[in-house]
Image 1 (cartoon, rainbow, N blue to C red):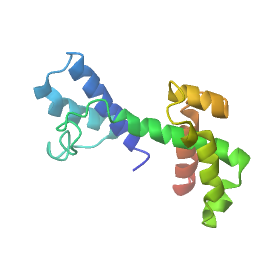
Image 2 (tube, helix red, strand yellow):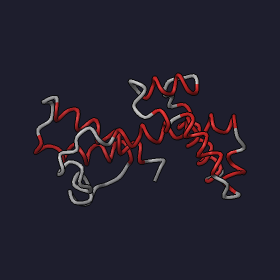
Image 3 (cartoon, rainbow, N blue to C red):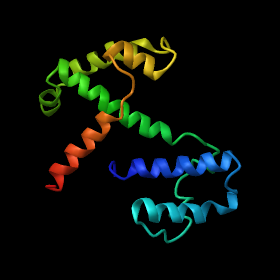
Length: 150
């Protein structure tokens, strides 16, 4: 789920960083995975297939890929925050009216392609600040407080 998935990404990143940095042997990944799942998410891992081998990224040598998922979620939350300042995005989405939202995204993001040297440069120029995890944290906090009546 979107609440615990960021912790999965962080867990995987930390393991990758330690393997690539020479601080963790590949043979020790399952033990480290299981320990981190327990300490970070209080999850007991029943098998390597449902643990460190649960998806294809590492077997496809896609190291460093997982953080892009979390960066994407944080970016989406920040863009949504700023889009809502310019448009009544929630009402438009409820009514199935996406043309203005798409036009906003095209103007702020898509039309620029590789114009900017980094995501931070794009965001700072187009919305006034670099990537800020605050918006993703606020999104998750608001959504799950309401969902679970916390």
